[in-house]
Length: 246
Image (cartoon, rainbow, N blue to C red; front, side, top):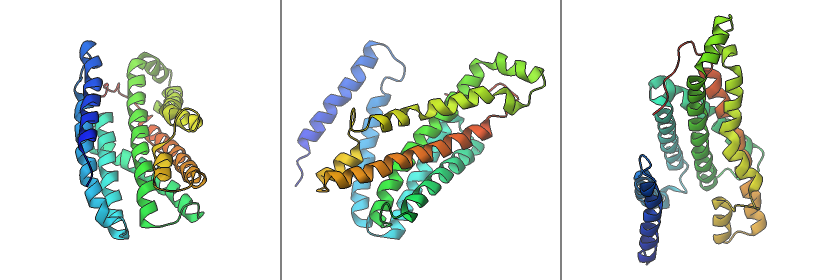
């Protein structure tokens, strides 16, 4: 029987530590981190129970990944500014990046094509693609809104909408990939990724865990690059000043 008391105590203290600095600084949405922790804990509890029964079933693993992808695409679309057009864009961009990346991983034999590994790498790549999609979409919209006079000037000179936002588009893609790039560059020096540590705790040798982790990191970078480029390519031709995302 698992003793949950220490876990609940630690999480409660950490929630307070996440909230107090924001409350002192009077930051907006100061309860957001606490609510995120509560929601994450509930979702992890549910998914832990569910996965215990489906992790060996290809069909149910596929259903689980589809559910993860749908929630991720919906979340990113809301962050950019909800519309069915944005949902379709995010779904297409993330879907392309994830499918291409995961197909390469399994086709090369770098990781065995089993339900367990498919769920593991699929879930990790989906989550990171969601973050990159969100950053790319929001930062592009904010950049165009902040520098609309520059964009409008290009349009007035006869530039196409895509040309008018070309430099902003390129900088946005670079910025959207900075967190993932830095995480990849500093792995082993600054951070030990969860997949690596989890594999070692599960009894896998450090060498095998490192092999799995580098595949995961490369997959995240590839899927993120494809996702960001597709999103910005579609958003770039702007004729009307966009509103700032909520």
